[in-house]
Structure formats: structure tokens, C-alpha cells
Image (tube, rainbow, N blue to C red; front, side, top):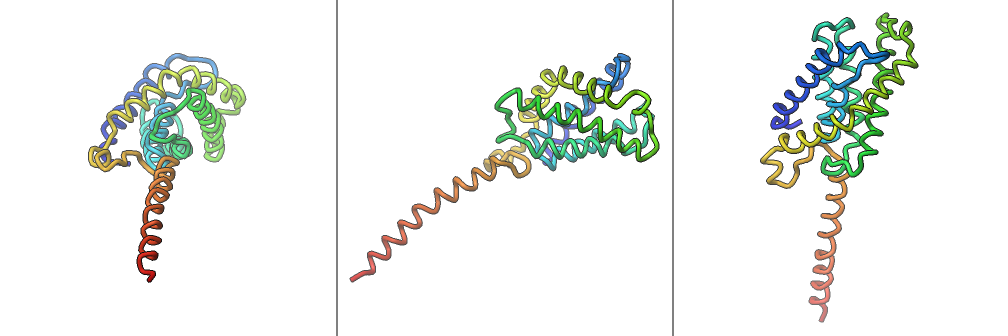
Length: 213
């Protein structure tokens, strides 16, 4: 991830953490707690790509593990968000711009279900059986519902801020401002290769004809 993206990423992650701990964590909603940090990580991963999404997810999860009133093993949430950021970054659209709202909501839905199941699995490995008492099914359903309700307000705003304030001036001047490999990079490579192969082939044929007696 480019250094120009670190300040805006830090601000978004800290803001999401504050909302997660001080607002949504105190609502006492039934089932799961709305996961603002997951939405921030998914939004930035859809702009930064898999590498940036992985780094953002790990940093955001580690901060959540250390922030009070954390009652789980340190590194558990960092692992979950790291994997979710990487997976969401693999689905980064060309130029980091979603063409439809439904595609972004689908990514959020898959991430909400996968992160809840993965968090419960990691907890079972370290001896945390809280998910069994609450009910894993209700946790998955409520996490999916809460995250889908908040996603239209959080994810587009995070993606917009990440694109606008996370640009690298040097890379933008060179025409490559997207982080990590993606379909846009591959398509530009193919287009450049096809465009450059035609004239050189014709030039070689013309030189060949010129050498004939």
C-alpha cells in the first residue's frame, strides 16, 4: 500500500473504531453487533486491492483487539479482518469504482457471513464458547442484516474518500494510480500489446519488400 494512503486510511479506521466501540457497541441490539470496521475494511479493499485490503484489515482488527472493552484473545479479530480485506480486494473493480450497488452489497453480505463464521471458529479453537450460548445461526443472520442496512451509507463514502484522498501524485502522473494487480491492469496490458504489435509487423513486411530486387 502506498504511503500516500496511510493518513486517510488511519482516519477512516479510527473513526470506524470509535463508532464501533462507543456507539454501536452500546446499543444492546439482539444478536450480533453492527460491524462498522468490517465495512470500512471492505470499502478500502475495493479501492486498494488485495495487498492494501489485507494490511488495512490487519491494522483495523489489531486496534479492535486492543481497544477496551475487548474480551477476546489479541489477534483474533485481526486475523478475521485481514482475510476479509484480502478476499474483498481480489474483487476490486477496474479503477476502484463499483459499477452497481448490488455488486458492493453482495461483497458485504459474503464478508458479513464469512467473518462471523470465521470469528466463531477461531474462538472455538482458543476455547471461547460464547457463540454457542448466543446461537451461531442468530449471530450470522443479525450480522448480515445489520451490515447490509449500514453498507449503503458506509461503503460508498469510504470508497469515495479512499479514491479522492488516497491518490499517489507520482503514480497518478505516470497513469497508474491503482494499487495492486487487477483486471484493469491486465486489460491495459493487453490493449497496449495489441496496439504496439500491429505497426511493428507492418514495418517489418515493408522492409522485407524493399530488399527484394
